[in-house]
Length: 300
Image 1 (cartoon, rainbow, N blue to C red):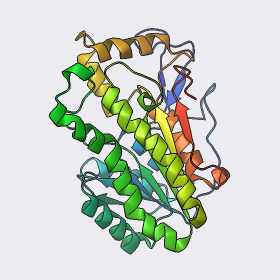
Image 2: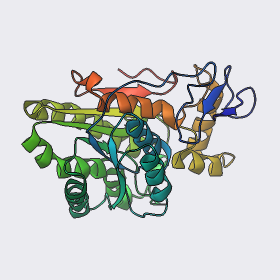
Image 3: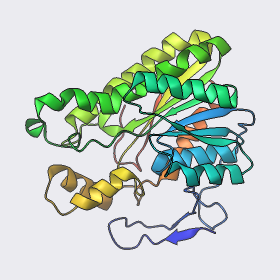
Image 4: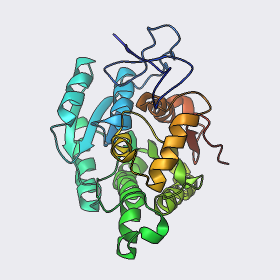
């Protein structure tokens, strides 16, 4: 049963009501909500990094509902366990696979374990980031130059490790769907996100280049970029600094108050875009970046 989130008051104000169920997806059984996307992922195997919460969890569940078997790849198994159980309850195969996405050998081990346990990998969802306290939104002048590389490692290199780790397998099979999740700061200048935006911008350009390179093997490469999204770790971080007066806190408060379409993203809003790019319906799409942001910006 969907829980209705009121939108008339508070920081997530809106002119409509949205139903958001316990699986982290929009509840189409309630009036005025988005209908479930219909696609067929029967026989497909997907890896979802960062799949234990937020956007990754919602994407994993939507793909499972569409018939895919899912490997939830995170550092620890504790948060992943409930998601694995939810997927199994849908009649799909699911398992937690340990990974440290900041380590290429760990990403290789992740892929090899999934191939061993599931037989193959069809879909790679490169999502989530390690939570390093020194890598956070700050004005450029306040970022320690010693940390520049960590911004790129956290937001760009982790995605590239996942992509490279699965590439040889997908090349051999001449099929694959790779979807990265990043931030609109890579497409639209955002105060205090110069380095985060630079990493995201690099990923967006890599998406185009890799799509061109990988097309000969029928591997599609796309990216979903997004903005402040409720019910995610990033939103929790924002909630802790909401009244701090930090530049990024002020920017995000404006986003909350002025979303043109009336409400902040929910994880499912982004996850439906991920599902589409993982589905056969998007087979003619590669090298693209799709922004899901409620009309906050219109990057070219």
